[in-house]
Image (cartoon, rainbow, N blue to C red; front, side, top):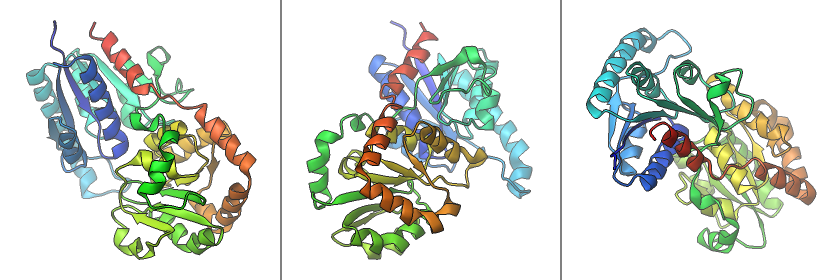
Length: 362
């Protein structure tokens, strides 16, 4: 039996890292004796998260272009040349059968080097609006696994496979965990629970909104699980009380989803894919600070299918309390959003992506 070797690259944010780890885990199930190597960007979170998941990782000296003229931008050509050279060395030494990129700075030079060496490459694009790296890589890639329809305007049509984004498998049946989750957080089973997700680092504008609206929620008999992020925990932990659970980071995502009735969330690609599987009513507040305004486009794709509500940060001041109160009282609307977002779920995305990778090695 052939011993397969896989290189995966994805980093910068959890949205790129966790899909790469999920793909590696699924490949490991199918090929238990396969060898794996991850390649990331030095000083980025993948250098911690990947070893924690049990995989070896090598770091490239690479960073993205800033929007304004900085010393970092002047260094970019040097970093890119260095990363391409290092990627070629890694590929020559490791001799992978396939190289998989899930986005992030390091996947650019790595997949470029793999393509030049004649090694099959797979691009996994999580967003509804691809970034520049994946657009460039798609020209040489053997397969492009996507989570949204209508990406032919960005990628060669014949290479696109609609697979969905990899998600945690423990989210598939959260309804059965509701009682356990309510008990775990010490919540009141008779009250509505609002879950607030700002991402692992936190979202400043969402935290400001929740602080302002907190009394309003409590007066409407709503209890809150508020994930404020590591950067902001010291500022907001003072609001912890029996009906408000302030946390910096959530380990058991299945529990918070199971306990919640309404969710407020950013619209990163992984979060959107998870929320489709979870199937609860969602108010998306996209981050306006990401490249190409990805998050607004991700959320809009769900809104277009009548599966969520979208509020821009600029609309929060005047519209949030009206929109939230209307949703809280309208059980028909809650059910409609829940039913429609569930229709967009792709729970077998990881298996579908791995099936595309396997085609390239068989």
